[in-house]
Amino acid sequence: MDPSILLAQVINEDMLQQHGLNQNPAVVELQRGYIRGIWTLLDNEERLELLKVQPLRLLKQLEEEGNITRNDIEILIESQLHDRFSDFDLEFDATMHILDKHDAYITGQFTLGLIDGGFKTDEIDFHIPAVQTTAFINSMITQGFTELDKDIMDGVEGGKRANVISCEKHPLVSIAHFHSTVSMNYIAHHGLVLLYPALTLRRAGLSNGGPWDTHINAFQAIQKYQNLGYTITVVSDVEGHCCGSDPSCPQAIRSLQDKGVCHFRWADFRMTRSSRLRTSRDARKCIWQLATGDWCVGAGGENTGMVMVNGHCEVIKNNQDCQMQEEE
Image 1: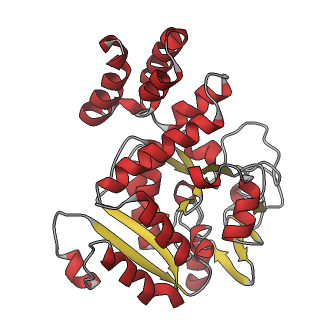
Image 2: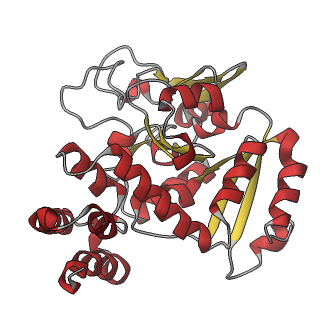
Image 3: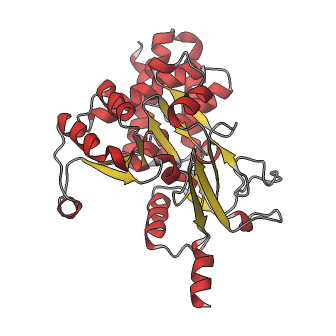
């Protein structure tokens, strides 16, 4: 490959790591323009080499323009996950086997970092069914991790950390109950799933607890992602959106099988339809609604959300309304 072709990688890595300019739309346009300018000069291997360091939002734009395929993106994202796993001394195939064996999902900042491409984290969160907790921890120990109490871990600085979140209900109940749509993504043994890709890929999100969320954990989490450059609001800013049916509307009752979900499959599952994977591997039935419907521009919204996964159901309360009731 001509050394000059590596300029796109230099632009991404240097500006991303040293200046944070990868979040600047002008830089994204520069990358896209550069890639388009040399596209016809490259063979397939060179194209993938050029793109393997690019963020998912840029890859999606190139897919929409017809420059790359969904299969290309899946190959690239899987390669990026290999690299991020190596930071934790995790091997891809072994980790996917653990996720499959224990019905576990990787969520949180690690997953968002893979999607965003603009930051890395020293922590990786695993959401698992409570009945699998002991077996899962033993599997992680075989991968070289050491089990420590949370109180000890909170006092440890540096190093890599795997957080095990034990769920009494299906892990997807917790994922669809997160503080905002920014975190409603997960890595499964079969692929990467984004519940609100239209928002997340443009570094935006909807709150799942009201504009003045008083729950300290939710407030801190939202602030953390705002500090990373994400805009989190209570309503979609899509003008003229159809309330109740647009996937980015807080009034919409969403499904794991609807058109608003984006799914990138790992190599072993690319011959299977993504919707079938989510039904057979994740949940037969999964629906949810955010708790901020009454803040949408359309009339008739509710201030209480919900999650239903197979036989597990949970109501999501608007924390502002809860505070008002307590004061009354």
